[in-house]
Image (cartoon, rainbow, N blue to C red; front, side):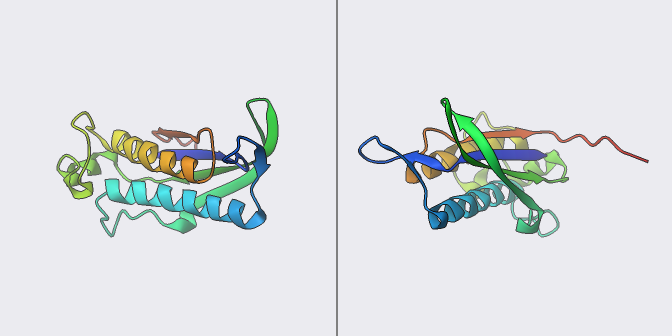
Length: 144
């Protein structure tokens, strides 16, 4: 499973003015995004000790991006986790997280559901229009 979350440093304040997060808020935003990512993956895998995704496996790359025609500092937060997706069966339909919708049938859908829910909360907390993310199967092109 490969997950990437993209966040931007700019935000809109309560008056609708465009602002840039302070260094502290920008760092907190990145750290909270990492926490949401790890929680979503680990809840989906039912916190099995052999499958736990660790913060040390999360990569944060910063640079410059564009949102709605405005250039801003951005961060790409990613996790490659090579645990079999059929581990979702351990959840017995999502009971361990208590609120999985009936249409969630596999780990990719469960992680996507949890990320949509919690990243929306994070977007509101940090004044973001949106937070982009992808959840997909991972593929490795092996070298020699």
